[in-house]
Length: 249
Image (cartoon, rainbow, N blue to C red; front, top):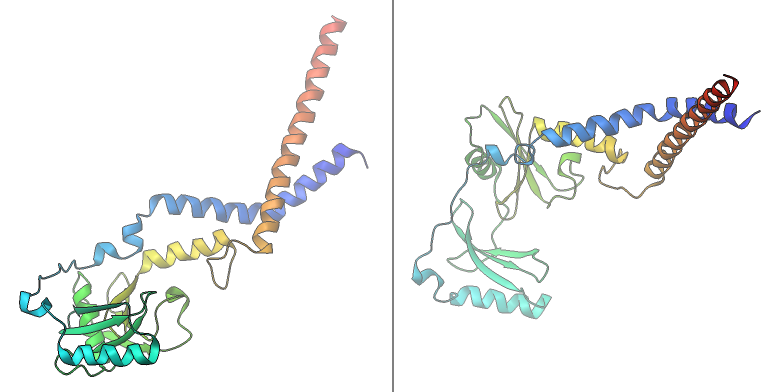
């Protein structure tokens, strides 16, 4: 088989093979360029709650009961790196965190005892307060393992609060601290679907370093290269034919 014909056949079949993925990449790129990130992240539907300055008496010193708890954790686990009095909407609590920022424990400000997980009703209250619109009914689910794809790599345990609204918002609330850790909506799910097609990571969705993506990228490059080669051969042939006709005149 002549090189030109072999290149043409290879280009045609490779083009058919990679055309759908090229279309997915193009559609994804177009979508990423027009969807505002603050809309995708749910920040447009978030109620901005400003910090309220604490009274001086609240921050002058750590109460004795809290100091005793900090000392106990220092003896057992090496101790926390930060101690902060935080109110996330359920009343103040002391949060002890390690050097990596992970929560060590959350303490009652009155007696220094460890606080339990927040309740489903408290999670619902925090989620509704965080959402800027008026939702209908809500459903609350405690997630302790195997989080859904939309909350991959999220802090656990967490409450999933599904709000009844046209945007289909899902608010994730840290079950230990009451912090809103993620906001999901229709725009996020559309974005995430095309992100999955873009990365070709159909399980975790965020991995660019895998053979399937590498293989299709190489096929796309080879398809483009073969198309340019065919165009070059065709242009060269037509140019030679034009020169020969000119010479015969």
